[in-house]
Length: 577
Ligand code: FES
Image 1: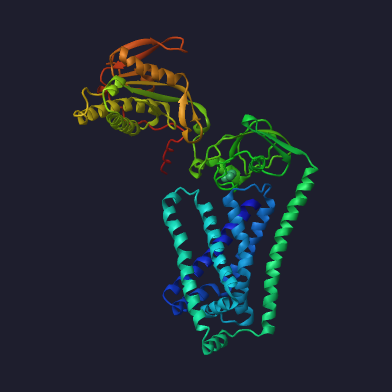
Image 2: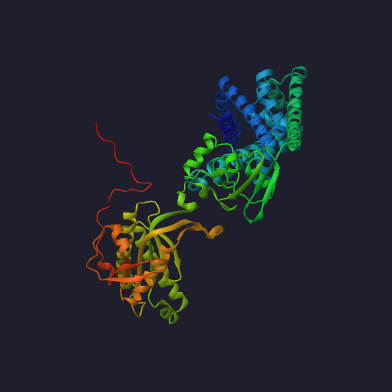
């Protein structure tokens, strides 16, 4: 296992232990909504769980590991140009020690080493006796520890596919638990503040708490000073170490990165490509914050590719998951040595977690054999001129829905709706024969769906809707095209143009569907009953033979699916012994 992976796992699990402690502690606080007695009862269970030697060891170990790894990762970061949410997470984490040191040493450590019986009543008494600053520090500690843990979990889970569904519930719990805990905290604190006027009650409380003498408490105060000052010194030490490292690296060779549109980033070797982007102010997607999980920072490397160190197993795993070719790397994981590199981020800076999920290679561009279907409503412009805009939109949406469903049921991908036209692709992840059969079947289903639609709209339409459909198969360039939110998977090339031409020829041949013989041959279907025509197509040396089908509903159903041959085909079952 890579050291980086080991650190990541340790950081995660130490965080989980600490967050479990905070969660159970806040749950204990919420019992204060019932009474102080209920809080004390809950504390018995809480202490049973967390004061045992193994739990104490786990908690102390998790704290030391978590804080050390946070310092280490702060040192390792080459760029401090972070997003606001990342700075918030760091600031919250860094405030936990100064806010919480006195509380932990004054309760848990004092319990272990000076025999203090740290009841809720005693803690409230100590806080309210100290004054509002101590109370506010406690309030800040709850907010900082809880929010820091919640952000950490959110960063971890947001890449999981099921998280979107659970997010509202998770957010509700994240909000409700600290609010209830703090209401209980202030209610019971006020109750104890009132009881503090009763000398006998105070005397009994102090006696029962077994408050250590000033002599016995002195090491605890010293420990508090050491922790708080030590934390500050450590923080400054890490900053100084970063500064020295920068000076040392400047004496060595430079890395120069060239981005599309003339963007450049340069500096001493050491930072990752993502950190170079950030240092140069070049927008770069990084949903997981550079942890090598989301894949949204992926870049294509041109010049200089050979000089890069090979991917670590962890990076390779992510690249394999999304099916990337060898020249694609995760920008957050590659630390280029001195030299010049051409770097092209593959996702927009606004990419979301879902954009990082597994994609087929055609998402970043490839040439492959696909079937393309074009459909268009005949005479719709004239029809629309005599209708109210609302009616036009209503009819069009019913039409798009019917056609979209027919295409998807046949197994196709609706590429786009253009005006009153539809473009669909078949064979993005499957073999050529299945693609052609699906496209012809889609034409049949669309014709049937149109009949049903005309029937249901008979009261709204003067004339039934009529469509023309063109189907062709061939090589096309498939990839994600567009910009920002309008970026989508589509196909370009002669095959697409030919399918569009066949659709427009349906007017000339007065038929509903035209299928190229290439598509018929690929499908292995018998359409010999339909008349043939030969047409000239731009970019093709010979004539293209096509079949004209007057009524698409008369197309035969495709034969039972042949075993899939594509990249995502099911594997044959192993032979039985
Ligand atoms: S930023 Fe998430 S993998 Fe690089």
